[in-house]
Length: 198
Image 1 (cartoon, rainbow, N blue to C red):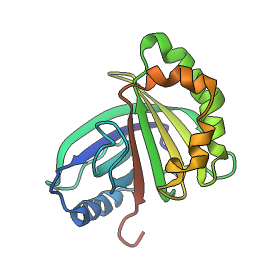
Image 2: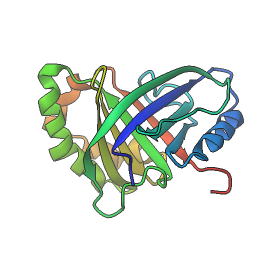
Image 3: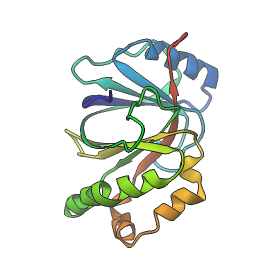
């Protein structure tokens, strides 16, 4: 089951960090049953949190997360979120079980926020699930700070969001109107990491 209230923690890797070291750290972190751990092993397409290697840890907010020792990351960001939207037409939304996770984090301006959320609920979270290999959607809202919107998409493989089918589904008039609300969006594709022997 996905966490309804979570703390998302992004770890952004140093330029010279060793990928094997990062993955070993992720496996150690994933031993905590309170968290799901996702490793960004290739460059993301945009955004501060999506432009390099790193890790995303999602922890139940009531229990928190104690990061294992490690000196591979250059920056760490934490933010609390609450689950607001779920769309799981055929496959149950399980962030700890999906092979890959597309994560986006947007910061819509106040004057566009209401319509942007409605677009996510009514159109975007529906049509993108018509893309083969995209199985479910979870929509979170930040409860403090910038009140960002964080979206999880459960993927069969890392190339699903780069496919022609994905791009075709995005060609709508409503999405075009929402583009200004996506300025500064963070976007990254992560591989789910399980604990050793998991």
